[in-house]
Image (cartoon, rainbow, N blue to C red; front, side, top):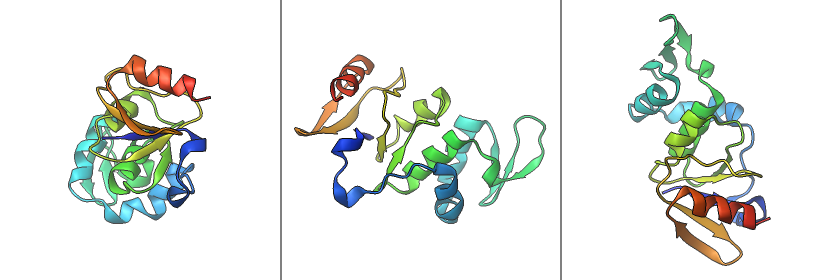
Length: 147
């Protein structure tokens, strides 16, 4: 389950927050991709993963370097393959957010509420510790109330 942090509640051992997801993906995550990445890439960008470094575009079928994935897709892959880091999700679109909120683990943050309407459960961490929220409205209230 995803854990959501506000910037002021991120534990020191989990810092720094990864803000530039493109660079982190290109330098770190791409090296650990495996067959599990194919489903994430298909769901978010509609592209087919050919191999670790190559995708086939959904638009024209061209073969592209994997660094052409959207930032939202790269962010989701970063979260999936690096569950001990905290990733800023401000550059994610709805398609990426929908998938991110279904990941089995990972840590996210943003300065403002970015929530999938389809989210069913997430952990939140604040000054009172870690707790679970079970719907969109509850998470939105927590996020706004944490300011």
